[in-house]
Length: 125
Image (cartoon, rainbow, N blue to C red; front, side, top):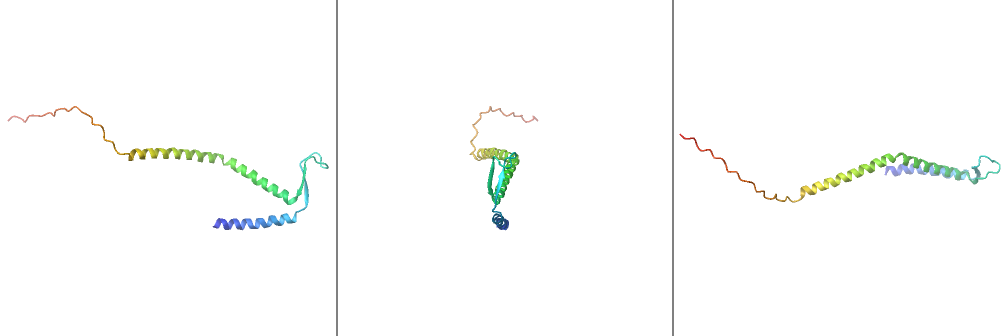
């Protein structure tokens, strides 16, 4: 519940600022990607200034997300290996519990050779 309130308190003002920025900066700008010819660029785009800013923000979020995802690769791998170990250990536990709860089967009768008991005669008086 608190998370929803905090998210609302952050996103609503941010949306208001972005809308005000978009309304105030509707003029068209020329974005050129040709560093050699400034008068007649080979690769250029005309778009509103707020569109350019939004594109840059979206690109920054995507690049940041990719960087975070790549940085967390070792933790995801460790979690995956730990999960595999947990599954293997759980399988061992299940097998041992099945073994323990299985009805005891009587041991087969082993015929042993009966050795006669040694009797010591009472001492003669």
